[in-house]
Amino acid sequence: MNSDERICSIALTLCPGIGHIGAKRLIEGAGSAVEVFRNRKELPEILPGINPATVTALDCPAAFLRAGQEMEFVEKNRISCLTLKDEAYPSRLRECEDAPIVLFFKGNTDFNRLRVINMVGTRRATDYGKQFCADFLHEMAVLCPDVLVVSGLAYGIDIHAHRAALANRLSTVAVLAHGMDRIYPFVHRKTAVDMLADGGLLTEFLTETNPDRFNFVSRNRIVAGMCDATVVVESSEKGGSLITADLAVGYHRDCFAVPGRASDAASIGCNRLIRDNKAALIQSAEDLVCAMGWMPVSKAEKPEAVQRNLFPDLSEEEEGVVHILSCRGDLHINTLVVEANLPVNRMSALLFELEMKGVVKALVGGVYHLR
Image (cartoon, rainbow, N blue to C red; front, top):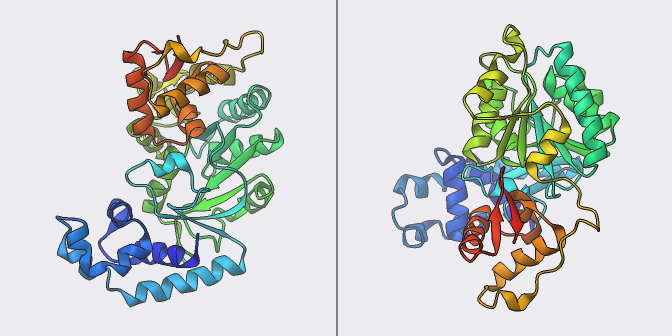
């Protein structure tokens, strides 16, 4: 990806009144951020119905000046600038309507590995919540050592999830609510630095951005959107982790919650998520791994390859899905999306067609089985 696309993507985020959804639609319609600006005056023809105010807003020299300054900081500090066009951009997040058009990353990990979860919860974690983080990720390291653990570096459950991941040699990423020129809270700086070797720090915000309250809500959509599953460990009646859970459900991601006693204030939110069927109850990493269809398949259990001549009417994409399932066994739809490198809406359509043809069967929790 050339620097022009990066600078134009950053500049697009700075044009007044466009927003996340508007910016993403402009890029999808024009083909790239560069083309959005290059064909600014022709956009009404390229994108019928576009608001004239948007075309006016794109004439913003100050945005390019600020974008250039940000790129200088990025290059000086060896930070990765990821646009929607970059392969390294989180593919799960890219499918979300309000995905950020540019991300900044410092660290070393693969956002597009087969298994990605986030662990979130109250900033006032109890010993119960802290111990669950430790036990859950210790068990996860045995069952799925390739999993990426995402959280927000905040006090409470977030920081304990990061530290438990590090202790068990799991890759872990913190999504920040501010720019890369600071760490908030500062007391978590050592943990943030430790994460850079296998994991790292991710943000959509430019330098000089303060960790204001509304930035945390915006941050939560990235946490939810880039993962296969959200795990709420502890939550009071209100809180950011419940927002993350709602976002995950809206993105058609799996959501899990750890139950607590009815009298525990720190478990009110989790218990309600379970009661309202917004989250599945889990008590261990094995519960999540089973629900997601991530249990390893031994060679003895691996299904035999499907004979191609049994399904003569399959399209090339359908054949690809069948091949993946025949080699890997039962898989969650999010894993299929990553394996096949297809958008989630396209994969859903393919799986529906394969179900209608009697080739695959939908199991509980978004898992698919080859008949």
